Image 1 (cartoon, one colour):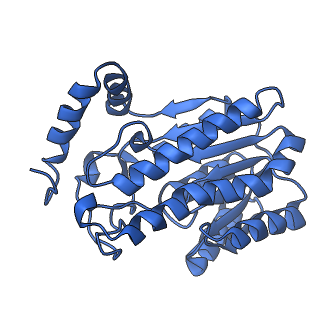
Image 2: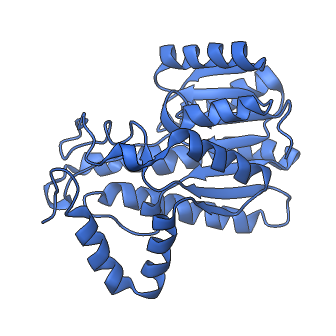
Length: 271
């Protein structure tokens, strides 16, 4: 796909992978509709991208857990640009808490943002994507293939996203619409800092060594290349690919390996 003058909607675009995707699409000439809750930051991002890359960018304050916000996001994108070619469902929350100690509102919050946010945005954009034979992207996780300890709500929401996207892809198989699931693996971004604790409050610190992880900029390059090549699935790290295959072929072994891996994180929840 040539992105020149194409219209790309990205949720969760004020930081991390979403912001990096916005920059990568802008480099390739796409016009952008960027959504996030942090409106002031989002406006700064759009202004910078317009100035640097000479594209048009629209900032829209939206909470994807609210259906009305998602509907309004698509309406304003169409009002401004008249078309939509790509939707990147990137907005997401993480968590870090054992299920036994977890307030269930945390799990509901993650499902509302990670799963329902994807469903709402996809529902309202689909008629336009059908017209342009464009792309619908879900930024998922290895946690959508393999449940991770201390991340029950996050894993559940990403499993739900993966199932939704797979079913949707099959429904749209002969329509010309491209549906892709992107699984970055562990990425250096603020998602772990903003991850919810057992009481729903932000942790405010990361539990992992960010310096050894893939950068959000590299993830964005992989995602945009995947859209251009109309890939079905992107599992971006060797560790991620190995985890997916071991979990399929040797699930009991995967239980032990994943358990052991998470005993090594900072202030480990399991020992």
